[in-house]
Image (cartoon, rainbow, N blue to C red; front, side):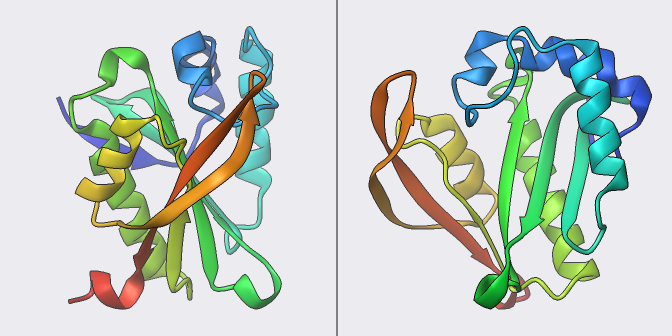
Length: 172
């Protein structure tokens, strides 16, 4: 099986809805996503990503053998952080532990560094999500610290990890 990233297509909405409607996937994402996540929700998200400023938002479908099975997005920050971007990602449960997300993160970061002036890409996974931390480590990110009591999810106060990939380190 081959993992690639590509721009979203409206036809991906059904697969997107199936992936995000899994509570195990949503447990590792930020709040604000509807549950269940419908095909209409997927179409709205995809439309927004396709309409976004391509110098600010880098949004990709993660595909395995051509089927959309996840998402990776890199979002430029503002003001003094305008050359820094935040990374977010997820993949369907049936694709966990197979190396696909690591490959997608590498592809997305390489694309952003090659096609923008972004100098640093960071991610903040929940500290308990060891698999997500491992994805980042295998993709070349360095853990910079623990953000203590940094989030509240389902009534629980959670720590998060801060990981970053710096362009000049990627080039060496």
